[in-house]
Image 1: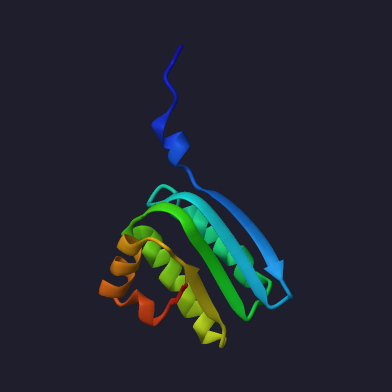
Image 2 (image 1 turned 30 degrees about the vertical axis):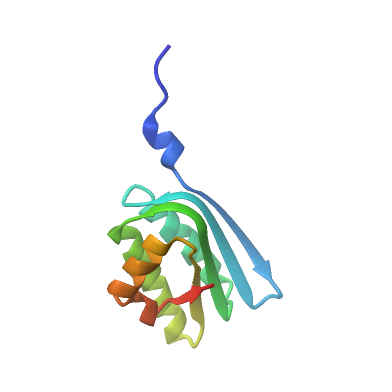
Length: 113
């Protein structure tokens, strides 16, 4: 029997919901890296297209975040800011928060909690 593909267990799962018509929430479980950047970009684009004031990316169950995923998140935050909205990132990992603060992405992306 062939062994399972290790990448299959790392692929993130996304869920999109709208709260009170002005907040779009994207929940992510898994790892955000170069292999999942296109999927992340796609779900964020879909969430943005509904015109929310706030786009909340719930990454509280994200185990790993690389620079490619950071770029996708930053680009989305910049698009939201350009139309007077904001991107909020729910991030409970101290290591991920440190990266966001060291790279100054936290100036554009609103970190929660």
